[in-house]
Amino acid sequence: MRPETLTNTLPRRSVLATTGGCVLASASITGAAGQTDTGGVSQESFAIREGTAEETTVYVTTADADGPTAFVIGGMHGNEVAGYTAAGKISNWTIEVGTLVTIPESNAVAIERGTRNDQHGNNLNRAFPEWSEPETELARAIWDVVSKYQPDVVIDLHESTGIYGGDVTNGVGQAIFTGTNSDEAAQVTDFVNRNYVDDSDLVFQVGGFSSPDVQPRDLLVHKAARDLGADAFLAETYSGVALEKRVQWHTAIVERLLKDGVSPSGILSDSERTVESQSQTQTIETASVDSGSTTDKPTAKITTLPTWTSASSVQKGETITLDGSQSKSPTGGIDCYEWKIGPDGTYEQAGPKIDVTVEENNYPVTLRVNSNGASDTDEITLSTGC
Ligand SMILES: [Zn+2]
Image (cartoon, rainbow, N blue to C red):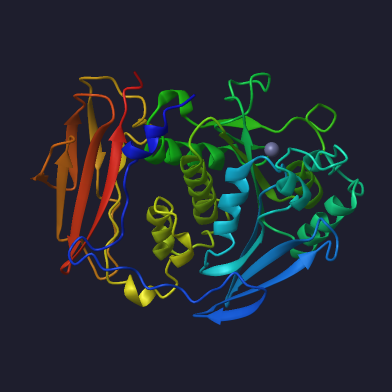
């Protein structure tokens, strides 16, 4: 078992102003069936397998501005709760350009039963053979949606009872599998590891798709990549960790992919960094589309230097350089950078970059940036992994 206390040592990110503690305006998007328009984004939903036990909802969010299409699916396996919980939240995200199609609870029967497969033992994520018709009614209905929207990127959210160690025998958790864009998957795993993983046993790795004639085969991501040429990613979290943490990982992975992994420039807006912070408080539904409330606030961002340094595997006593110069302000430059180092630190150091000597495991460092009277913080946890 992993310690449940993981959630107490999360890096905290916040785009809320630290002065005044104001709350972001809620978007008026609803998850309900039908169509809602709000600020250049509309959402509609419809059912597939309607009138059957397999009936489930497809959510389609469309921005006024043209752009790429992303498809996110959860619940292919009914006992993988974090995947469909995260996908449900993601179905309410707003986007800057393009289209976001989400099927959060793709295998409703298995979810209802709390089992991996449906009542007939059908494994939904083995029902998508490349270059031929999917094998079940439900798989065909899902594939019809994928085919209709021709997504540029497909993301499938899963969980595993074991951790991926380079082969699949001991499980596939804490990994992003792709056959199309391992560079992007590596960037996403690095991002998530740096910001959301504080246990070296739980760092995310990148895995490749098996070839068409090798098990496991006939996965949805395989078919999307091979039949449609989509960039396809399958994200697996380790189910031995608290649900809240696993949901946070899934949402962080998808958020990063929707920002960076959908050419040319992502479909989430910069202001959707709100999702990053709010994913920790389980209130993603309120992520702001009304950018009027956030556009005048800066966004603090800590990166490690050199960039390949991992914050989750530093040595005790090691000195690591942290860079705040990737922070942004929509109203001009950052007026000041302040750093709080260590669990009992105060904002004593200033400047865009600092050197930090890691004194203990899970060593927190917080950056606060100010711009035109508004502020934002970002926090990173430096872990020695022991
Ligand atoms: Zn699964």
